[in-house]
Structures are given as structure tokens and as C-alpha cells.
Image (tube, rainbow, N blue to C red; front, side, top):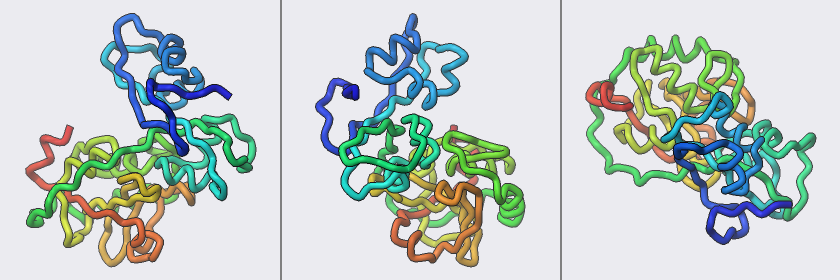
Amino acid sequence: MKTFALGVLLVLGGALAGSYRVQPGDTLWRIAVSHDVDLTVLLLLNPEAAGGLKAGTELRLPERHRVAKGETLWRIARRYGTDVATLKRLNGLRSDALAVGQELWVPPAPAAAAPAPPQPAPAPAVDTSRLERIASAYLGASYRWGATGPDAFDCSGYVGRVYGELGVALPRSTRDLWARLEPVRDLRPGDLVFFSFGGRGVDHVGIYLGNDRFIHANSVKNRVMIERFSAPWYRKVYLGARRVTPAKRTSLR
């Protein structure tokens, strides 16, 4: 099996997450060779690159993960903020069986941004009753990593779609949502709630609906669904909340 090198010595558990800015004259084949990445994996992580490269574009580079004793595809998917189906596609796996020491291609794991100090809660930016109607219209839609709807979503793609229909443009990634929105403690309907399933920083986001409910694109159950916010599993991995405020609506892009 090929060794994945990015100019650093790999340690057990995978390499550093990375990206590459396309330079004039680059081709996908040259980028794959120079970073020792399978071309198929590079395309799976960057499907928009299949239509051609544009200088200055950021490409996602995968990590390598070495399977430890007791690990499952589900646990590894949670750690890297992805889903089992994506891991299978990246690695050409036909079953869930793993061997200790096996190396897997995985998406780059998001790094958590330092949380800002708590701020007084400003007024909501949107009509929360309308937000719930729009959010609930996608109940049952499939989960797919990298998707933004309307038939499938990943977690941040779903949040962006709902707020987009309310006229609010949000950052695309969970990491940027966490870093750039206003932190709050007193949850209100419409606030974004963030989790760390993999223990490596923020890797999941949903929308709080009030009355102990939140709605999100669930990669484990593979659909958009409403769940109980106080459920022990979610409280254990909950990181905090962010609010979309009127002052931020025109400056999030």
C-alpha cells in the first residue's frame, strides 16, 4: 500500500488535514502525483474539478488513517466528519470489515477555531416560525457528504439551504459557521448548535427549533430529522451555539 506523504512524517492515526491552491498550468494528474494521492480519491473529494481547474482554486487533500484495534467505519467516519458511504467510496470497500493496521483514505478533518467570548444575545435575524416551516420541508431528505440539496445534504449544506431560503447567506463549512457567527448561551429557535463527534474539534451542526428539539442532516441515520436536544448522546458531544444576527447578514460571505 502506498505511503501518503505531504512533506511530514506520518504518525499513527493519520496525517494533517490539508488543501492545495491550484497554480497556473496545474493538472489534476500532476497534483495527484506530487501529493501522492490517488487521482480517483482527489476527484471524489473535489468533484467540481472534473470540469477543469482554475488557478487559485482550493482543492481538498485527503488524509491517511491507520485502523486501530476496535475501530469501525462508523467511528472513523464520525472522527473525520463524514459518513460510512463516503469512506467506502474513497477506499473502494464493498463491506464494513476492517483489519487492524489497514490504511484508509479519509476527508481532511476540520480544525476547530478558538471560540469567541460569550456576547449578549441580540435579536433574531429571521422569522423563526417561518424557519421551522422551511427546515421541516426537507425532513427525510438523504444525507450525502458535500451535498447542498435539495434532495440530499451534509450538515452544513442543510443549514445553509434553510437560511438561504430565508435570504441569509451563510459560510459553507461547519468550521466557518462556528468561527464567524455570534456565540450564545441562551438558546433560541433558529440558533445553530454545534457538536464534536470525533473529539477533534467542531464537526457537526444543526438548527435548534425550541422545546428541546433540533433538526439536522444525520449521517448515521442517513436523513434529515428532528431529534431531542437533551438526549444523552448529543449532550455528551455538544460544543456550543451560534446565532445569525441582523448585523452579520450582509457580511458572512
